[in-house]
Image 1 (tube, helix red, strand yellow):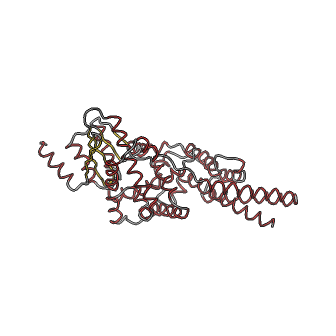
Image 2 (spheres, one colour):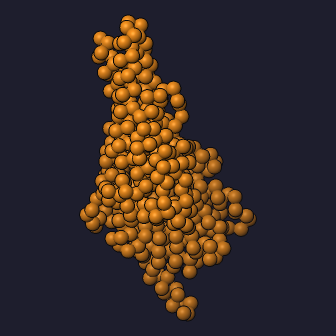
Image 3 (spheres, rainbow, N blue to C red):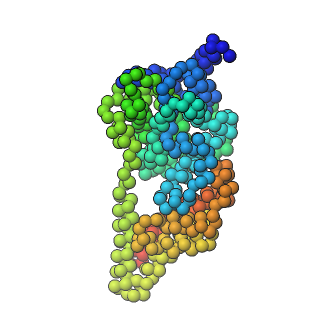
Length: 410
């Protein structure tokens, strides 16, 4: 193919594509806004790489998402014991839910979401160019989004996520248009992001500022006396905001990025509320023993039965192994004396040990959890379900035990 024909094809592929060019500190950033479910975006990336010469390529990916794109089999190597022990079960479950949303798009439109990012990564590898991963870690973004909204809004978010997993209807054109103009994370929470300024800030605005800072940081490390030209591939929903930050952002980029990459501090009031409840209950049990030994023994029995019973019920609903159910019953009542891994974690680790997940469970995990039954038939999903239901049962049992014991004394 002649150079003229190549130029014509490139011009055709780039026609109508959202592209901005930003000059900053001797660097020219060619910023391409893409749609995560569009073949034309893949062609636009390839056309830019064919028609222009770049010194580096930046993509809207974090390390974990990039690794997942490079090696889709990585998920099969997940160590469930480590995930549960490190308290990352929630993040893994959220990532699984988001992946089911992406799978629905892939099945419906025949293109894997993020294919344009993969094309940019492949282009960098073929041309031996530096690849800059400029997005914030998805786990940090989800944590900041979760902490940015109020208590009741969190139930709405959970409901929206669950609905996106089990929805059977075809994704309509309006949702696809949102994806073409927006962001994958924003789309998964579309209803709430549009109505909640804090949620929009966590999912979109903060990442605009973060990615701008990361671009400046990477450019500062690699730019020499000669000008540098960088191709930046991001979702179209970030194009305007990120380019504005790139032009106007001041201060040290590394400091800005570090501040925006911090996980939000955990709210202390739930912890203190739980501690206060447990102290109140045990004070009541001690008072019951002071009044009457039999009354104290009854109060202590109620604590064990309520906390252990509800925790075991959670494991039973998850269809856990009998040993997992027993471990939940034993672990829940002694939770106040055993800080660290929650009762759900202990029960889930027993489940993973007794019913060790098979290779096939990891291979079919994303397909299985699209259906209700898959959460109980897939061993990986069932272990995560067991974790959450036992933790929920333990919490309910503590409150139920406290109310029952206090009522019996007064």
